[in-house]
Image 1 (cartoon, rainbow, N blue to C red):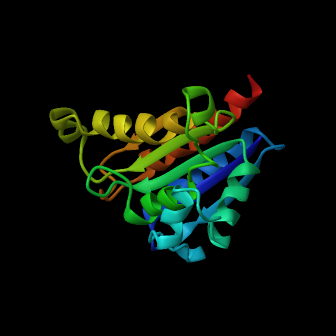
Image 2 (cartoon, rainbow, N blue to C red; image 1 turned 90 degrees about the horizontal axis):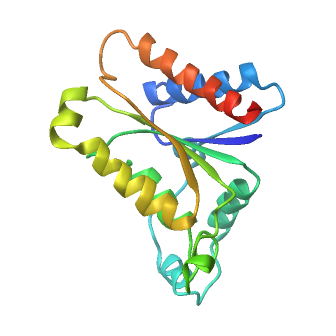
Length: 198
């Protein structure tokens, strides 16, 4: 199985990067045949700002820019998309949101017309790994994680037909000992490898 792990954090030494590496190691340890590509959006210099051309792509009066086509080709080559990101204001950071805005275009990720023609990414599995600073009580008390799942799982990926098979929330990521979260990320990678084997 081909896995594309997309990381959205500007610091290559961040905990988010460590989590992404742990997920990738977990996948690779149990599935030697799996390929895992790490896509560090900040290091690669992806521009998340929507342009007039991006709007014209949405209106289907222009073709996507080369950087968007390259990202779409990368997703077309994968079976499973794993997004690893810090929670900013109870959602994606702007870099990842802009990547989705620009890459998941009308005509490629979804289309107009009835539901049958609208959802174009039905072959794609999606795994979301959110790295959060708050504790479980905050998320439970305010319903933030449920809201995130509605917005992201349903509002983005189900709209395109992609199947969200896991949405993990790693909590209290600012504490002094993060080994438990790294272990959870590694186990998640292993479970994805086992899912493929099953």
